[in-house]
Structures are given as structure tokens and as C-alpha cells.
Length: 200
Image (cartoon, rainbow, N blue to C red; front, side, top):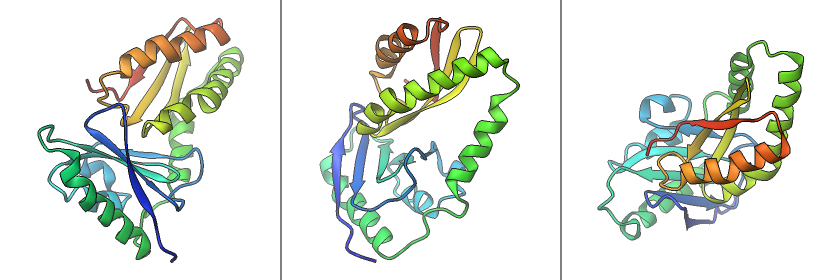
């Protein structure tokens, strides 16, 4: 394995830090969000990160890991070096990131939650997914998080906010002022956008 370089990047959520690597952890568009150690059964690296007593959430995407801490009084300057070194060493050593392919898990979960939409709902859902993937997700990933489409029914879009977005003080404003306005403008059938995974 070649040398891994990693740097920390602040996010709008003061309790989350994004650790960006020069190597690929997951395929583009695939991410995993572990709100606790119990949810991380598929990820040995996430389980080990939860071994740090201040880690409360782990989010992994294409080339970054976002860690959310549980102790607001603990400054990032004291823990960034430790987390950065752990992630760097783990990846350089070829440590197992996942025991089951997250892309396959994500596809199965989306299929299970899709239900039986009408043809029109299916068409509208696809337009919404395309807008989220092309306009919203790249911006949210810049902040160390992710947004995924969950469902569309009777004008209401349900999305999942993950990573640094969960618990971010500005998540509700971003959701209503940014995402909801964009979707209403581009897809007139949309009346409202609601989010799961927001803990404020």
C-alpha cells in the first residue's frame, strides 16, 4: 500500500470533523453512516473509531471519514492528531474497512424502501434523485455529510441526512431554505421536504 496522506477539514457542524484521504474508501455515490457502535457491525474501522471514548458517530464516503464527537468541551486541536494518525495507519496497513460491500447493502436498502410507487411517482422520484445527486449531494459532501433520497409520496419528499449533517445547527435551515426551495422550483409536484437522521 502506498503512503496515505490525510488532512482534517472543519464542517459547519462544530462537533464534526472531516478527515480527507488521498485514497478511495468507497465508490462514488456510496456512503455509510454509523450513529453508534452497534450500527457499525459491518465496519471494523468504524468499530475501532468508536473505541475512542469521545467518538459518537462515524460517516464514511468515497475519500473521507467524518467523525462526530460526543464531548463539546473537548477541543478538536487535541484530538485531530490522534484520529488522523489512527485512520492513516489503519488504511496504510490494509485494515479491513467493511465486511460486507456497502454498495450492495445500500442498493438492497433502497429497493426495500422504494415500495410500489405509481408510474408518475416513480418519474417524479427519479427527477428528485437526479437533482439531489447532481446539485445537492456534492455540496453536502463538501461539509462532511451526505443526503440520500428515501421516498416521495403525495408531494412530500423524505430524505436522510447523514454524517456531519446529523446534529448540525444549520441542517434545518439548509433543508428548508436550500433543498426544499430547489426541489419546489425544479419539480412543481413537490410541496415539502422532510428529513430523517436530524438530531438537533
